[in-house]
Length: 270
Image (cartoon, rainbow, N blue to C red; front, top):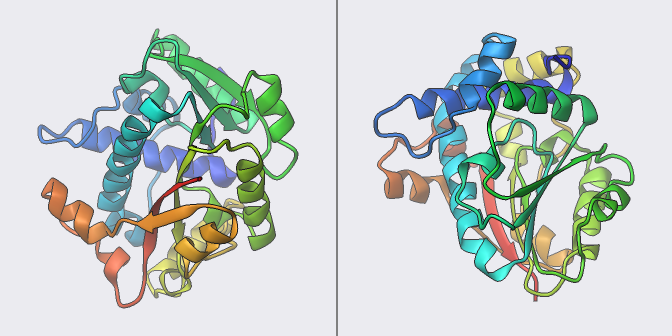
């Protein structure tokens, strides 16, 4: 099997898989991710800091938010791209049209591990899944178009759990690249954090642990709507309080601690 993703940003993908596996085991689950436990079993459970435990409900609400975004976006789009897909299994667990192209971009080693586990589970995608091994800090757009992506077709983009790990210049480059590939009618959903969230006392231990594994947070965003507008998108933020009320779950405490925010954003391109 390919090397387990237990270092760097890839390690965080395992932690998210743990949260999704835990949620899947609940009788009142907000989503089902049957492959999440297989990833955890292949690697072993990773202990998280206290802030990580406090954020479990955020990971769950975030997953459901982006699931619903993709379900609403694909009728008007002809393809989807999951940027930094990690151990995301939406290509397998969502009810896509069978011929709908879903491109997954991430580091070659992480995708190889993912495909190895998926193969052992004999999982079959519900769409036309296309894996694109690439480093987002380099020219990943060529790899995407070489894999069959059509920039003339409206696209549903998903950027989940990535931007805070990039510096501001790299984050702007990712958005500029997405914008350059987005036809009119394309949509985008993303997650980010603001500076007040990064400054929370509870996040010190998280940052130290991330630093040890080479995956520190390097940027924040205090105005995601304005930032996306500068890149040609009309955006809106969905508050965690609204999602928690909608789904009958507690509000993740760190997402509403003073001015601290973990942004969940959806946007459209005219």
